[in-house]
Length: 317
Image 1: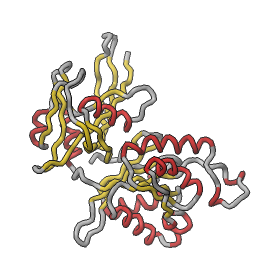
Image 2 (image 1 turned 90 degrees about the vertical axis):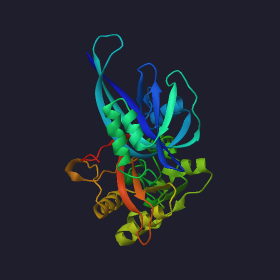
Image 3 (image 1 turned 120 degrees about the vertical axis):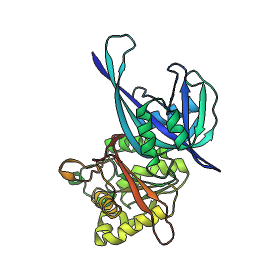
């Protein structure tokens, strides 16, 4: 008998005076040193599980960054009746508060530099995850680029299309995004000035105690009037730093993401026919190097999430 076990984890990192350190945990049950990770609770998303497991095992609150990789391996079932195919999805996660105390799962935590951490890790799979993390600097600007949730059908709406609101299903999608994107801690909310776009992210703005700022250049109408100007606007937002959340439309997002990826040499996950995906209620996590000198922000990773699940890029980083 074979079953499937889903788990989520992270490379938890912090900056010190000596550079970047990552957290490894010792689990007495297995007598191993590993990255923080654990199984998903029923109905839990990968992002929620990663943040929860980090806190339970290390005592630290974390903010998610780019998606790293998925690893899979077989594990024996506790009742001895067979094996389970276990998959673990890993994120980069910055420790922002908290502190370690021994607990039921973890009796020791060590903050280490990359080389020391790689030597201490027990399993080769964790070493591969750490190397994926080390391939890019951890301190990146995260731009969350979401497509609006489902709206009522255009043919059933007699008014101005700009005012076409979310459907009941769309409101459920917007709530799911509200819960999911909190793990990335956006610090401002921007949107194409379409009611369905604004409604999709209004709850997140309310959580932040701020307003949704309109970005006409990232609406379908204004973007296609001058795509170069629209792309420049998104890069300007990225260049301001922080973690902006932008809600746009299906006629804009694939072109923007593809243009950035082609410019900066980033492999993208694609749907059938090589199309850059952008389903309603989905989002991209775009990771940029901050501006340096005369160079603006550079895209270094682009991760697509549909239904809270990551869609892997065609080639490993």
